[in-house]
Every structure is written in C-alpha cells, then in structure tokens.
Length: 371
Image (cartoon, rainbow, N blue to C red; front, side, top):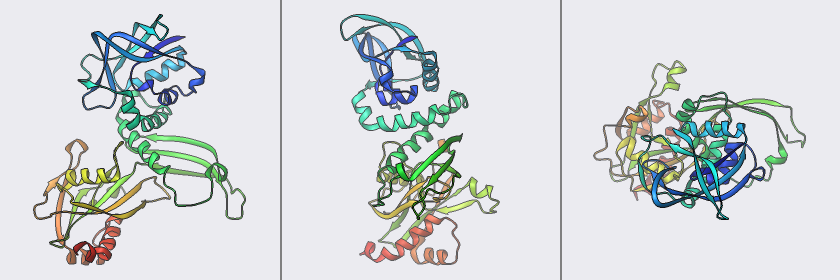
C-alpha cells in the first residue's frame, strides 16, 4: 500500500475516480499541505506544476492505501506528462504530518506561468478532463503512454463533444436507459480518430426489444463549418486542401474545395471556434455569424456533429495560402462571385456535402443578408 499527495488536477475527485477506475468511497481522502512548495500554472498548458519555494505552501489531497494496481494506473495517466514520484512529508488537517509520494515534473519539462487555481480549472475543464480520462484509461495495457500522449488532444476534443451531445435534446420521449441494452462496448483503436465497437439491442416500434446488433463507429469531436460571404460584393470564399480519406477511396481528385472548417477545442463554443478557424484557414475576421443549423455528418458511421454557419466579412483581400504548419495544413483560397458559385454547384463541380448545404442555405437567405 502507498500514500500519495495530489496538488493539481487529481485533487478533482471525479478525475481521480476516472483515473483509478473506482469510487472515492473506497479511498481515504484527507486535505493536506506540502510546506516549502508552490503550485504554479504551466505556460501553454491547463495543468499545474510544483516548485520549491520558502515560506510557501501547496494545498492538496492526501490519499492513503493505494494499491499497486492504483499506482500502475496513475503512472499510466501521468506518464504522458513527464512526471516522477518523490517522497516528502505533508501536514494533515489535524496538524499531524505523514509521509507521502508526490508527482514532480522533469526539471526542464515545463515553464512556470503565474498562480494556478483548482476552482477555476474545475469550472472550465473539470468535466471534460474526467471524461477524457475514462477513454484514456481504457487503453491501459494496450497503448504505450508515449503513444497515448499524442492522442490526448483528440481524446479531449471528443470528450468536449460528448458534453455537448448530452445536452442535445429535441423532445423525443424515449429513454435510452430503458430502451437500449448494451452487451459489449469495446474501444478497438485510438489515434487522431478512434474506432469503437458495440453489441446492443434497442426497443423496436412494436414495443419489443430487437435482436442484438454489432455496430462500429468512428469517434470524432464536433466541428464548425463556415462559408465566408461578402454581402457588399456578393462573393463567397472557398478553400482548397488535400484530403487523405478522399484519396483512400481512389478518388483521382483528392484536393477538395470546401468552406472554412475545424474541430471545436475543449473550452470553446462553436462560435469561438468559427472565428478562430476563419483566421487560421483564410485570414478572415468575420463581422457576424449566421447559423445555418447543424447535424450529424454521417450518423450511420461517425459521431461527428457539425455546426453550420455563413460568416459575413470583407473579402477584398483574403489570404491566398494559409493553414497551420503544426497540423500539416496547406490551404489556398479562392473568391467567387455568388452567381458563378451557384452555377458551379448546379453543375456538380463540388464534392463536399457541407459546402452544398451551405450553398443552398445562402441562396435562400442571400437577399436578407444583403439587405
């Protein structure tokens, strides 16, 4: 058995439960202080780091009786973040002290950047981090920590999308807790995307439970798709980039003309992501966003939900090439008069379905936007 002191995100009990894979009711949790240390924010990151500092103290959580299995799970979770354990004495809430293991970062791994607040972090990212940890920990023993670290941004994006999805109600009276029975749920693959398999039954329209079905899904986060439109000049902007899935299906033209698009990062609203992607992919600052609806892009195979917008802006001097080199993006843009754009839509010159959806929405609302 081992005793650990947590000073950072693992003080958030739902996250600790997700990492350990068991309820906090099975654990001994006590508030504690590590004297001579200071918890600071990390530059460019959402988690904190700990440093030695005279006359300072780090608030934390003292957890007793952790098993070897618990330590293995913690090592897997923290392994992707360059942390090691050190033995130190901590002061408990009754004034006594105890020996505890403490996670410390590698000396050159991070750069301190001011004070870190647990309450502020929980409000912004507590739920999504705990949900992401559930997916991450399901790969323990199958995916190396270093490989999992590369997948974490995508896992967090999927977790953020799940939180959005849980609020997506339209009035359907059916209850999945009663009308769906899951027999097996297997996370088969993880990388930028994930593939999950499930064996389930669902209630049929005659009231009975149907046969057990085996289904697979491509797990993705939510995305925003924005068609830039200049109502003064009556022009639209399209971007073109290479798309590997189009190449993989043997399409001889894998360079696709599309609207501006991108994934919604954890902590972002769809509108914030739309403005960010406008700058990253086309160098456009939108004056206004008009919602064109939203929906699942391919509900039979993918979890991706897309939020559709027409973004109004000045298209007199758009970026010719753009994109983030860190994401391997090589993007060029093109401005088209609206009449030419719609004629190309009607001739079937575009293969991107969201682009076609937004083209038809703009055709119906163009006069209002110009007015």
